[in-house]
Image (cartoon, rainbow, N blue to C red; front, top):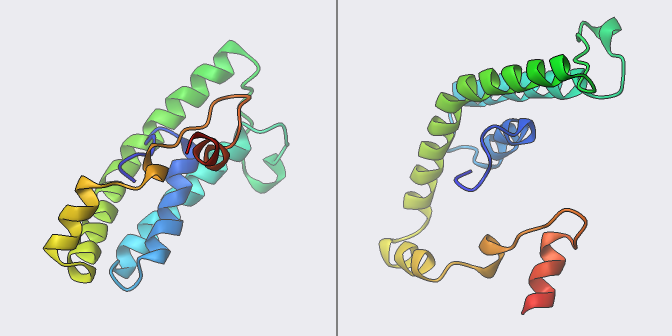
Amino acid sequence: LDLEQPACVHAQMDLLKISLKLQPFVDSTLVRQCLQTALEARKLDVAASPYDASAYGVDIIPIETKEGRAQYRHEQAELMERAEPVRKRLLDSYDVFLNLAFDEQMMQTAEQNPAEERFAKAEPGGLPWRKNLIESS
C-alpha cells in the first residue's frame, strides 16, 4: 500500500483484495468501505473503457477527447480523496497485523534488509517486473 500510486484506479480496487487477505485483522466496516471504494473505482474504469455500459447505469467518459480526459482526471482525483481515509485505516490494520505476527527483532531485520522484489520496476515496452528482477540478479 505504501508503494502504490493512490491516484491509480486499480490501486483503489486493490484495497478490497488487501482487506480480505488481512482478515480477521480488519473489521467488517472497513471491508465494506473497501468494497464500496473498489466498486466506485471499477465503475470509473468501465466508464472510461471502450465498452458501452450505459444500459447498466454507467455513464460514458469519452477519454479520446480533451474534455473526457479532463473529466476522468477530475473523477479520479475525487475518488483518490474519498479513498484516502479508507487507505489509511487499512494501513493501520496492516500495522496491527505486523505487530501481532512478528516480534520487534524480526521487523527491524526486515526493514534493514528489504527483499529485492520491493525495488523491482517494470518499464513500458519492457519485461515484466519479475523478469527484470530475475535478469538483474
